[in-house]
Length: 474
Ligand code: FAD
Ligand code: NAD
Image (cartoon, rainbow, N blue to C red; front, side, top):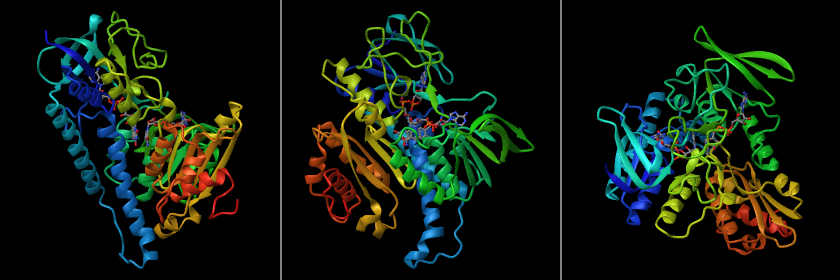
């Protein structure tokens, strides 16, 4: 039996960085993964690289170019004639990027001397791992001093709405449509619904998002959600709140959706239906009955604040455990666990994991919303600044949105920073750094920001906490 210091099950953005870091720290490491790429072959990188973060951003980029060429180039004096989209070429570009990155992970693992097994791993007792090969080959059992469970997540399927891979689809299906559907229904106006709904709307689909909750983007700060909602409405992304989908049926090549709103049932028919109602931990079949690791009612592996499970030497990270289902959160946990196994101190601050929605405008935040701060009874101050008042946003043709800063009224410590606007995904990093260093609104306000940049709005919002913004009336 081959034995290792560390075996990682799952090579997504949580698992593969854990394996690389463990190996860098001198630990003999193996990784087991069972993801199949579009070509049917094993593909490393998990959901994120294959059917998540990266392919969605590739299509967001392509569709943004298309929309800008069609609708916005004219105002720059650029004429293009009729603009058309060749969907197969756009998908090929996306697949090429995915291939580059998943191949890159394979190379990195090899270069770091991590043994990679293409197969399904199952944790047995005493930190043994059974590996069933994806293709031919014999089942083998490996043993390890430490096992890191990083099996990720899968889409939630709701009752009476079954995926058929063609009409009723999940994220993977919506990243691989062969043509622009005339109508696209999306169940759930969450992160996937907004990102992938935006892709196909920009390319010409009539997109309707059916959202069960009465509030739009309930996770985000209410002012930011309102600003984003206004923009999405303007773009004709049809978001219907308080709409609970009850069932969907494929009839004559179309999908008939039945939903309930204000106690009344109604129906809508779409060419395609994307179901994006959240994801659940992918732990079915991962754990032998006697392996000792506990799983909660939602199927998540139970871990403490250091990602340690109920069994010494067995760890859980990424989407398979509690906390936000975000790639960078999983990566931080993976690296931290590898450090801990090597006897080094490490910690992941789940309070300061940034969120980004890559719509247009982008939405990004870190820390608490105003509603959270209020409900905790904290005395706070806020400052905000609209991008419409910054020169760079106007020059870029991106005046939508705002920055909002929330700070403790007594200590001025930053409690939350919320952005809706172009490049919010990049700008939020400044706030994360400031908050990790226990920074104050005053700190952000006294740092010199380059002009003209979008980040001047962060500066001005921080100044406005103390009512001393320069480019707006306080
Ligand atoms: P995964 O990426 O799911 O990887 C788990 C891996 O383990 C998979 O390869 C799986 O096949 C394998 N596996 C599972 N069980 C076994 C087993 N028993 N044996 C062997 N292998 C196994 N997050 C962001 O931060 N930014 C984004 O922009 C973003 N965009 C997204 C867009 C979409 C459309 C989706 C669906 C998700 C997006 N996410 C994004 C979320 C992100 O993809 C996940 O948070 C991230 O992939 C979780 O990483 P992970 O390593 O925990 O799990
Ligand atoms: P989500 O939790 O973001 O949104 C799901 C939405 O579906 C919710 O608003 C929920 O109220 C609604 N819903 C649930 N059941 C419903 C029903 N029967 N009818 C109508 N609406 C219903 O989930 P998601 O969009 O599927 O994304 C899953 C996760 O993947 C995200 O939470 C996030 O962690 C991750 N992700 C991140 C990014 C990013 O970081 N940019 C992008 C995509 C996905």
